[in-house]
Image 1 (tube, one colour):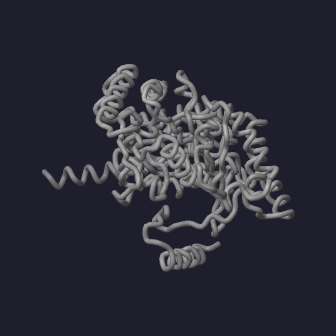
Image 2 (cartoon, helix red, strand yellow):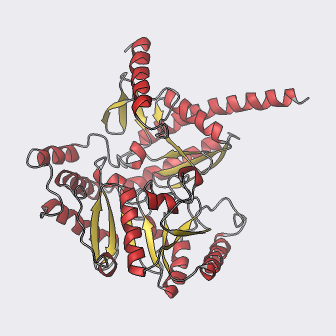
Image 3 (cartoon, rainbow, N blue to C red):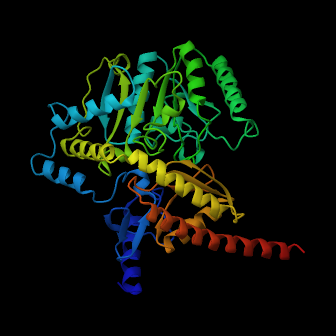
Length: 444
């Protein structure tokens, strides 16, 4: 399409968006784009421009766009029956729950399906607080767990927590951000020991019984930050002495994305699995599925009646089952480890010559590139799009570029994306350097 047609189409839809949707509903880019088609690791916008997708709809298109196995499962089930609710048996729901329970590592596991990660974390908080008869929750600083009233109330990243009101009393623990804060200068072992002392001190200040610790093994919105391996295992030892539950928020880290492990908690497994595990995003490759896995004693503690109208719908369960089957049969965890490792090293080589890049971190295909300012990160987001690459942004001050492609990413596509991001970052470095030089001139 011509530039004039593109501007008219995109601008018109953007104006309509602003007229009927909330002002706080964020859109990427100064001129937002409409994605209309996808195949493999690439998408196209309404103007026909092709992009390499390194964000997957916020880590949700986990395997590939238009994966034939998933689209066939969705179409086949939609042609039979779209909806029944949990009041009726659903073969796909039972089969998917069986597979997730077996993969979870939690003994005597039960699975409850929801429609989102927010709802999954909400349900986990309900289970933990009911089981422990307490509304006190431990959460990590810089965390994000969803946009519902209860999950916003435990989110430790103020940029994503619009209200101080909450049904829960939240106590924030240090340890999820390795490279910043008062313990950043310590060795990994000393860092972990200091964070354990912080946890014990926090528990000494709690009034009554604490219900649970909820933690992302790798913080997503927080900028793909993570503690040293084993930190949550050390926390688990303390929690167990007090009977406190551990909820592992695997909404972004699950299904092998980190490469080294199928679940993020497995990097902290010395003292056993979590009591509850939450998941969502990639399991159904874009269909709306979330859920909670918990040992039966915890899951069955609710005494009131409950159903789910849309959680575990026939279509989304069919999609999840097909997607999980594909992921396991094609060893996408192994691909994330191999290709992700190459991509991280390539990006570190790029960053070595660019002062605007503060750090490159991550595991597998979950990579954060932290820049020196939120302004630089916002500029990099725009420049990457101009180079044909879609990435995300996060971090406490919006300074981190979030890279999380579909897990079928090839070596050639990893190199293509790294080259595009290098071009974008060099343009950002030039712009930042020019402003720095202009600022020095003004102060002479």
